Image (cartoon, rainbow, N blue to C red):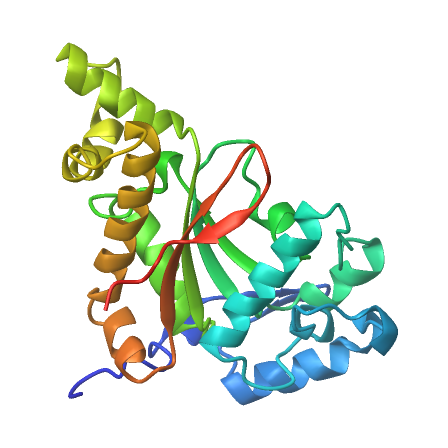
Length: 268
């Protein structure tokens, strides 16, 4: 690809962004210098081998010990959710001793684009710890039309933090989807910016209108599918890495009643 290689670091980002340190700020640091610093400062945050989870402990170590593949990152999330559903959560990396190792920088394993609903906290339902997930939450987990705040956050995680997985996470009984259905049925305008929000969900409701089953749950699933499709074609940062098999975009739905996360079947 000619011009800027957005599949790697974005030129200038590392130099512009400051990395907080107890003695002040580290700026204008190269990747190698930053990583060397992290290695030196992370020993106190290491977990013993007996307490490590399926989720890679690069957050506790201050850096990735090895490259995590997109499929491995997804499996780690599913394994964590399985523990959560069984009531066997280990709640890793949430003690004061873990904070210092993460103070210099972050190395998350996945981006989770989820709904702002208070019942769907990704770190808890996937049984992950500090630094494991780069979370972007907005009502209705909307992506298309959501603007630079949402897309830019996702692209930053991929371009600069080298995150190998993006998971678009919807959930059962989504209030944004319900509001969209009610708005269309009643042909009414909702107050404030809520009306603009539900307009972003409307394509999913319209596309799932003729599908059998509960209209809310069908629209929730379709909303996830549309979000995944949009991200997979997003240039110039995401699409190239997907073609290089360095990034995977997947979709899933969280069940509020059971706590289980189910992957949305990917289209060929």
